[in-house]
Image 1 (cartoon, rainbow, N blue to C red):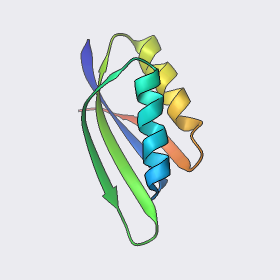
Image 2 (image 1 turned 90 degrees about the vertical axis):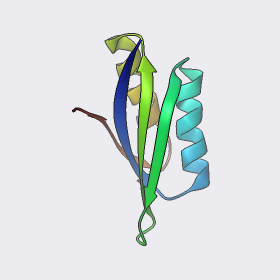
Image 3 (image 1 turned 120 degrees about the vertical axis):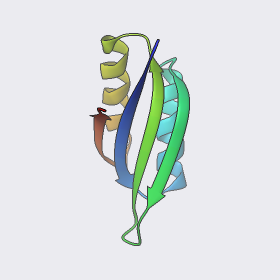
Image 4 (image 1 turned 45 degrees about the vertical axis):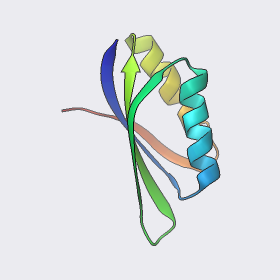
Length: 79
């Protein structure tokens, strides 16, 4: 597996975070690290380092995260 970083923009909510993490776990992907930042405007930026087997797995988990209610964006972070 390769370590890939993704960034999730969402509403600042423990339920949204739990559902994002459940989407990752249900996809059979291991989380290497997670960093959550919030702002006073009730928004959160979640950055995850994920252990990904292949591009298909990455695309699938990003699509599933995007379906979580309260998630505004999901993107791969390069570099």
